[in-house]
Length: 121
Image (cartoon, rainbow, N blue to C red; front, side, top):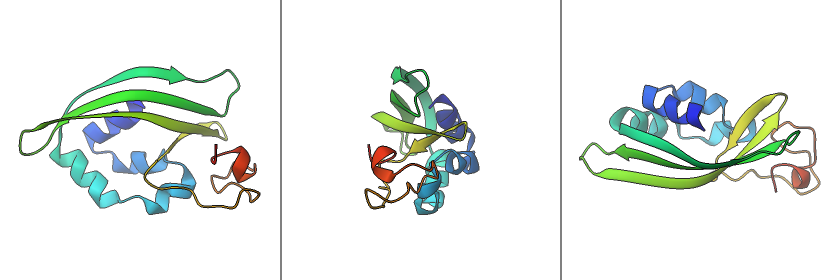
């Protein structure tokens, strides 16, 4: 989560796309992400909790991000984000773009598991 927050502060939108689960990457509004990144004054990130069991392929991070909009208003966003480990890399699951697949179909994230046993959880 820290690397994704830093990417927003530095305008590294390609990194944000690359670290989003592959099944969602084409759905991302890259222009909106770039605009938000460039027009915001980033004020800080607090990671409240992180959970990952040894050997697990999923994790959660609860965080608070703070920024200032162009009009000067301070903003705060608190979220519990889900991440999946696929072939040695952690990917963010964007809650704004649900992954669509049947329960018994292969997961579109590319893990090789059934959707119901992977990203549907």
